[in-house]
Length: 174
Image (cartoon, rainbow, N blue to C red; front, side, top):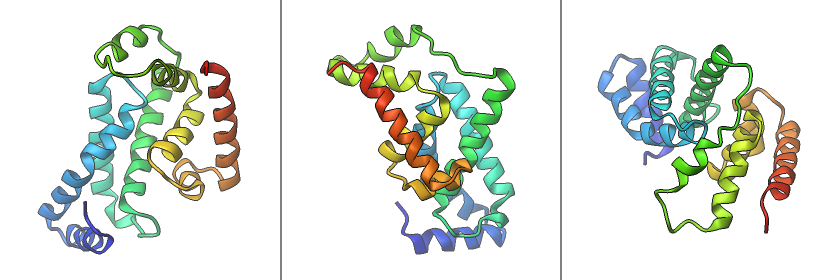
């Protein structure tokens, strides 16, 4: 993991035309971006495509990165936008596919029943609620950062998270 200073130096070098610097940014953040986007789709090829398109766009738009947030936050925002654009172009809403239940969770026998229920419940949330939950809980982003990433205000992020938690509680049998 790069320190903030090292990352800024890499960005400056990449802006100056140092392709190796951007490759280091790519190698540093690819797995994190893929893991994050993978939470929204079971189609690994689709997730690879979103990740690659996000990096291509980040490379082309690197001069627009202002440094007000972490590079990772900016990159995740681009990845989310790629995913949302793709989803909107294919379908107007994301339906829960019950075939995920048997495919996704059968590999890991050590998962508790509660964890399995929680994963299934998260998949049933609307895309916006799912994004807020995963960004806040799994990725530890603040509501301010989530607001910036999703183009909503901080209080709206808090409300969405609260509503998502209420939905999840009602879906998961404790």
